Image 1 (cartoon, helix red, strand yellow):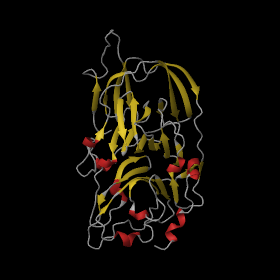
Image 2 (cartoon, rainbow, N blue to C red):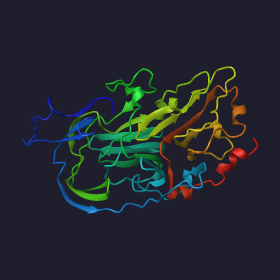
Image 3 (tube, rainbow, N blue to C red):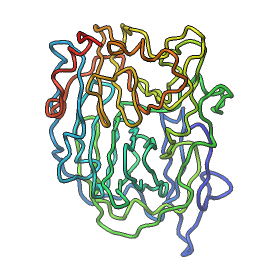
Image 4 (cartoon, rainbow, N blue to C red):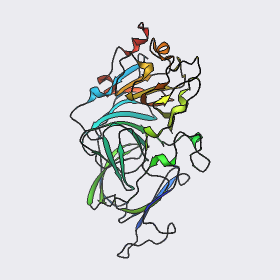
Length: 388
């Protein structure tokens, strides 16, 4: 994350003696990216974070990927996947994936196991409900509309809270997710033109100390999954400081960039990942040129697949296509897409759009996963041929 935080008790100088009340040393753990050449945090454990008692291979739920053949736009109705509930990690139903990113949906009503993904960052978007994110860095509470970014290899547990299940869109990267570089100074400060800033970002602010022995942690790594048994609970950190930690940002704090004529999707960009971007479409004043057409023009981004998750309001450009709350549209490279028939004419004179959506644009094609077939609206591809 682009700014420094210090939580709990840390010594004045790094890598110096820091002792517990009984005189023993706290155990340091430096968590960092790019081999000591990028962001990191330094944590102080009551017990050795390296002490494991057992390790065995773990078989996760299987995910099958197939190409988008025949190539066509797709409409996925995620709420059709609702079942009796699941945990927010192992219960994820994977919809779309390539070698850079996997996108899943889950209706979660129970805590996840302790989990570490050593292959990349996660960006979780809460469509509905609330959730507590527990980690060695502390507790981070999230509500509907929040993005939560969990850095690579952070042991964490996701706990749905409140009276209703949590609806969660999970974007799992093969690398790191963060604010676009063009929003940041060379030292990592948000610049004045950025649509959000440090005041909008939340992180853990107090340590989370949990006692326990022989604690199971599931680890996803580059060669599979492993179930570890740790000698002590990993949530035993009395303090930490640095730039790398779980953090949250509300889509409702994203400040839209508008203009006299229609603005292209990069103005909505919120995060960047390896070969993909995440954008936020929020309620906003629309184009104010006297001859403006507020909905998007037909466009073909020849380098990208576009996935859009509709999470609130009315998405004017898709009216009449069957898109609803919780829908996902996939518009692949090789297909020119744009507003539904009649949308351009209807939008003329509009001053405000009340829409809420999360977009993931990938620079490699997205395959279809098992759950996509279970919730697809097969008629979507032909909706542009209908008369308005």
